[in-house]
Length: 124
Image (cartoon, rainbow, N blue to C red; front, top):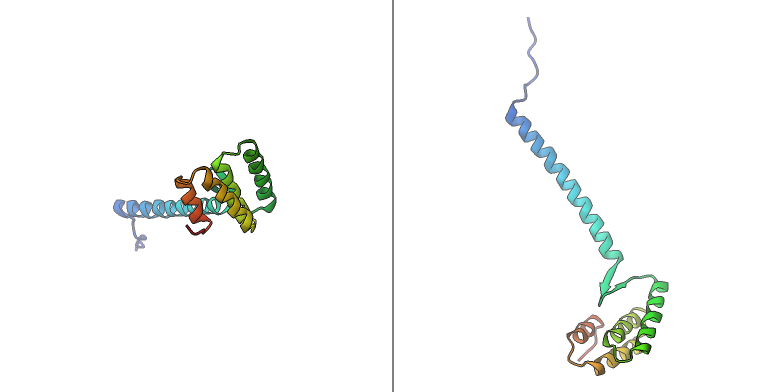
């Protein structure tokens, strides 16, 4: 007496199985890409064109760079705004406010002034 064969998989079940496998792989790839993207976002951010990092040595070197820029170009508003952000990051609130006010006197109606004002949580 012949034994009954195992359940035969028909074409529609094969297609369904392939769709499940491909969908599962797509989800894994998308999750992996999302994790990589989130990691990049958390490690490097850009403010007014300059990268913001949490490394104190990097921040100090950026501060030196922007101090040189504003020394050579004393009416460069964005340089003072960068210094205000850097000084705030370093915890130097008085210096941050001085640089912000200098930028504000150069170009009081700039939308970047308002942007940085909100970023640094300064009043009107």
